[in-house]
Length: 389
Image 1 (cartoon, rainbow, N blue to C red):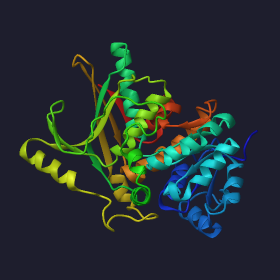
Image 2: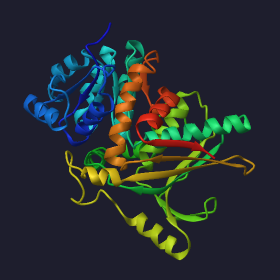
Image 3: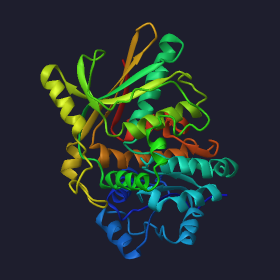
Image 4: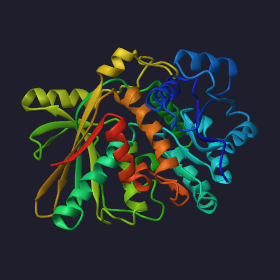
């Protein structure tokens, strides 16, 4: 049965949600624009944001509150896809995932909270399979560039070697921009949850926490600086690796171990050459960008000029068992936490509506359910590049 809206942007009055709504307004202004609506707790704030971003005066507005499950379920029944930026998801997202699974509604979020994600997989994956609900976590900087970067490299390896590479090293070469206030709040909520329930620590540290029933080989820890001979540089721990690596392994799992049952993957930040590179790597290893009260709070973020000045460049080094190498590179033209993320999740929602509408229900990763169609959208519309070398 057709729904009233293609996409509802839930959380449109928040900082990132507003950017998503602004992107949809500017990128899809024509007669063929998707049927989308803005949703949040306050109608007055929705009207204010609609006017602030220059959206048409007839842009539909929907009121829904995470603390009112009936309003959340009613919202789900009106849309093909719910795009939610209302986090931390472990605090505000459980009822929405349940409602989407039960009503057969597609869903995409920006979640980087693996313990909650595993809880949702255990609770709702089977229901989503029955109803056809296509639920997708981690539709922003964590983890689309990494998930699709590995997919791009493995496609190139299949074309060149006739088989996937068993080892991929992800190396973040440059990254300018701040993490979102929502990402910081999510990490703090996860740490608080782990303090209350120490059993969650096992989930947080397990590379295969999101692949129930499957355990691959031992994976690199990535917790200490090291010299990486493959790129002749010192590398340091990457703060988003704990979620990205889990999503990459889940993609492999959902694709029937297309990367191999023995696939090994890690992520680190390039620090530089020689003694200066070593010192930089050691400094990065001690740094916690989410510590203290510095940085944006949820609902806050950088200026447009700061977002536009951001960018990132990520190298993926694929190594065959005999040492043969193949690389891939992913770049983005905006800051990762806001400018690029808002475009990626918007295109993910539209991809679910327009490109993979016939995909089976379940709890997915972006790479496993959207793969090539999403990559094509991101290249054409969202300022990302994906190249194999």
